[in-house]
Length: 224
Image (cartoon, rainbow, N blue to C red; front, side, top):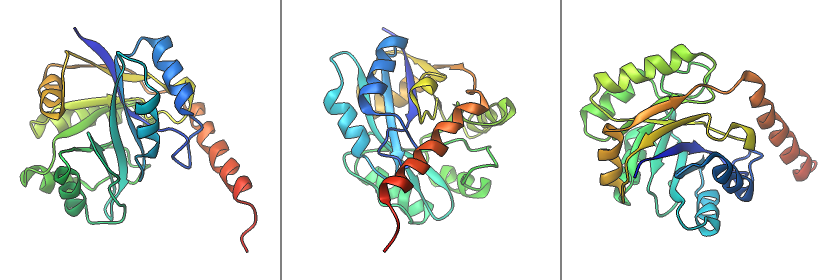
């Protein structure tokens, strides 16, 4: 049976997100999502908490959006945290070492810390890249998503889609319709048969990230 998956989400384990695990699960129920990939910045804590709380029938993929020296990278089907600050190739190998899949988020969004095109090409050429995020809910222009889809097709890699939600109202903005799968290799095969759905969230949705950062600064208090 096929279902819709949001494959790029951030919980409050990310410093710029307001989305609590219970709010994410409620949004999944309300939207009828079949599964999610929780990909917090440089940690798997939020993903593991969502996995612990998830009801039967909701597939939760433990992931991480890792900040490499050259740009951001997605790791899916992780067992443990991948440390940030490494070279992109080293990061990809660390993801693969634990049986995970390596992807490039929002590859054509010049407003974010994306991997340079030559790095993406090199990872693909070396066989260290498994997928391209073809549709992201936080890009400022739909054209960025169209270019990402073309990139994935040119590299002969499957495409994912995710809201990149940092708040409850963004969840499900971009999803991919997938046939049933179990485990990373079946997931990749399912992606080749998947269908990308949705459009970017409105620009005002990013206000939540500003609020989250301010909240964390307030909670941390003055430095000593």
